Length: 202
Image (tube, rainbow, N blue to C red):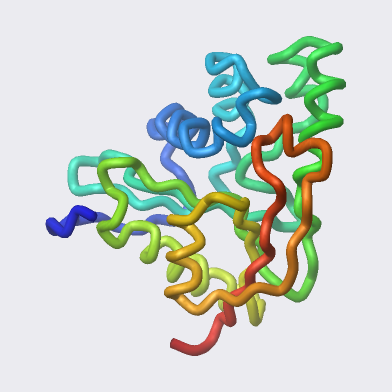
């Protein structure tokens, strides 16, 4: 863990000039899970950059303007990283789009009215262990409260021990587990735990 001080601010949205950087961070964080489906790397980052929705994100920006982390969310109006079938076709072609959409659909989390759904938390490697992820989660908690939600919800994949430790420390609790079945050989993990965090409280 790096204990040196790190200066940053949390902003709503994502500045356009940081879009490519956000796509690269997102792919670096989720490549292990999505690499066989969304690769090759250049197409994956191109797709992510194409479909990123700044209105569904909060970001941590360092004193030098560097993107240190981003947290996305889903709503009835969209998601931080979504994309239509047309977007998939534009990047992967018709056959590639059909195959990828069919697989990605298996990982999608349903939006529910009772809980605010987090859609990815990414922290730059050099900023990990320095409070960025915690700050982004607390900011998302405030955002959820402003929107009238009483709990946050997220999915953490088996084997993501660092993220799981953070969620446990903040007070998230398990409410279920969903297996990937035979697709564990495609995505590289057996399943994911659903966790929730009250908007009010410590």
